[in-house]
View 1: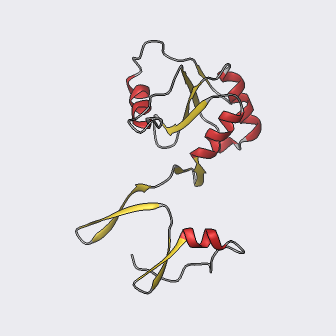
View 2: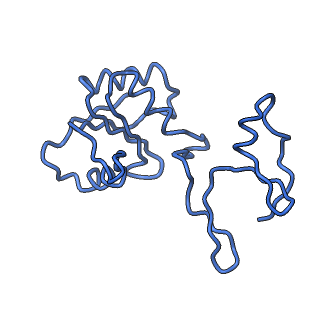
Length: 158
């Protein structure tokens, strides 16, 4: 991979966004894509992203956008993960009085490709040592499926 002029000159009338997304290194201008890479035997290898953007069936999806809709629909906290596979969006909610109603609100707001296929509920979200939702613990909980008080599950679309 080598720096080259970006495909566009920058964001129109958005100098702050340009300053955040573009940088110069060794005289070359680069764009921050959000991809994380590392060198391995002289090759750059993609190891993930620095955000929660995923690609499913050709659509780029920000899981945070789905989480925001879930919170506006009544969940106190909402986390979306790709589970049980890389093409399935699963939502885990806490504080949702009616998960089915939350799912229905999502179906009215989001395009079909962004709808969670599964919605699980917990009393409280697990937190990591920094006090943030522990996504790794949520994934482990989904995979083990043996936590007492297994949540109700609903499907937002039929």
